[in-house]
Length: 114
Length: 118
Image 1: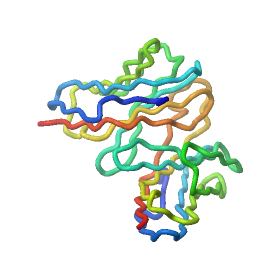
Image 2 (image 1 turned 60 degrees about the vertical axis):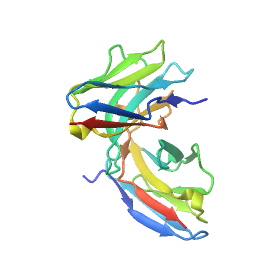
Image 3 (image 1 turned 135 degrees about the vertical axis):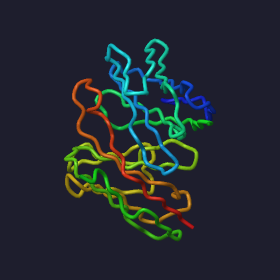
């Protein structure tokens, strides 16, 4: 079974609109963490945001927030006021237990239109 | 502070040739990782090293070997390259996570090596 599922292969959004990128996960470990990384066309992997399973509040980092719904096993990334520079691939990833290795989803290609 | 560096940036090999991809980090991180990314896909873990002196297989280890040379360096070797190993290879490093503290688990990635096997 897929550990991380990103169901949106591609999304197109108008500049300045908010956008939600979906991520669902599968784990039976009570301790886990969820990450979002951005990969622009230049290829580097850029860390955006992290949510731990025991964190009481949803994580926020500037324009990025994570809509964490534990019961539904979802960890959607919300980007507010999108910008042209947000056009990139976005990957959701998970670590389980004390392990540090990550399992990645297949990614969502986000295109911001002017 | 260069972060995570990888060499080479690009490489073309013929089937059956061998090569070693080099990775180094200057952040005093304990753990290091090798991932591959195939076109249109997410990253898959090849091998990782939780600490100096230890290595473990990831999701797709076949056809690869690794060496954790010291705390800074973690190399990936292809003994006999195959076209199926055409991919972009990323090295990453992280501190050992503690408790549930968020950023403690963040992995820092190198710029990647684009490998083509013909």
